[in-house]
Image (cartoon, rainbow, N blue to C red; front, top):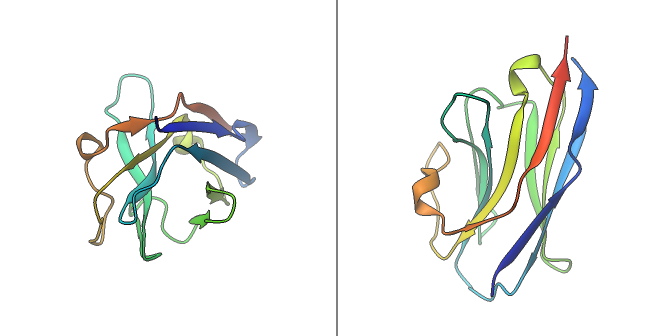
Length: 126
């Protein structure tokens, strides 16, 4: 059974940084896509960044140059380093995974992911 557990959220002032972590277990697919999504109150869930099993990455335009997604395969942990945070980055952030190879300039739709973590809140104040 696949389990994804996020951590690292919190409150920070604009311009600050946070690093989110997602510990994955029970995941044995050789070809996969893992990523970070976020959902602000009253808004749809949107893709932030994804990483494929070959290490290729995709980012939403709104976070390019500020956020970095990475994965430590030895620890089965996904990370999202968030720098130069803005108030509009405030949202619940979710880790997601599924057995398909993601490619493209932007993250895939959240509908393509069957495994989700419980979420971690990120709040950025101005």
